[in-house]
Length: 117
Image (cartoon, rainbow, N blue to C red; front, side, top):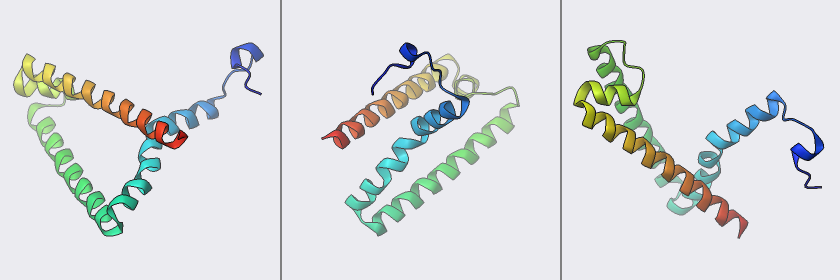
C-alpha cells in the first residue's frame, strides 16, 4: 500500500499540490489552536487571539507607513531593513526571518511528534 510515486509512475495533480501547500502553510496553526485554547481556557484563548490580532494590525500599519515614506521600490522585509538601517539592518532582518522559519519547522516537528505518541 505504501508505494512510492516514482515507482508507480504517477505524478501529483495540481489540486493535490495546492492541498499539500495549504496543509504545510496553514496546518500547524489550525491544528495547534484547539490545544492551546484547551490549556489556557476559552477566555484566555480569545484574549490571546484578540491581542495577537491587534498587534498584527498595528505592525502592518507601521510597515505600510514605512513603505509609503520610503517609496514604492521596497518589495521585501530585507529591503525595508536596508532602507531604514543600512547593511546591518538588512542582515538583522534576514537573520530574524531565518530564525523565525527555523522555529516554525521545530514547532511543526514537535507538534507532529506529540500527535504520534
